[in-house]
Amino acid sequence: MTHDETAKAAQELAKARKKLDDEFVEVRKSLGDVHVAYEAVNQAEADDNLHDLLKALEKAAKEARDGGIVGSGANDHRRALKKYIDVRDRPTPL
Image 1 (cartoon, rainbow, N blue to C red):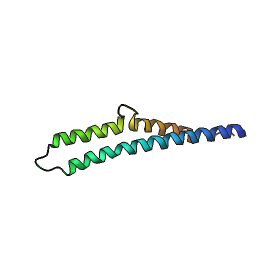
Image 2: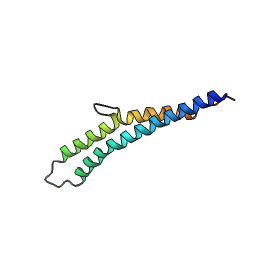
Image 3: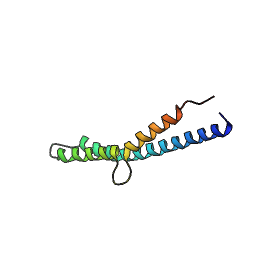
């Protein structure tokens, strides 16, 4: 592998890693809503509407997984992870 090819492969790996890290941060941010909704369910009492609280928790989890109006949630992270692993594990010609 030439120096240019090595540099290009390293650059591609760094780009894939940055995308993976960025997507991870976005998913972690969306998990905040899941934690808030979970705590509302966890702290509910007998006279609270558990159905609606659980529905809000499901919605928050779905948005973290699938994304909302903008972004694709954990789906983008899954794609970025696959790309990173593919680039990282690509065989290097001698």
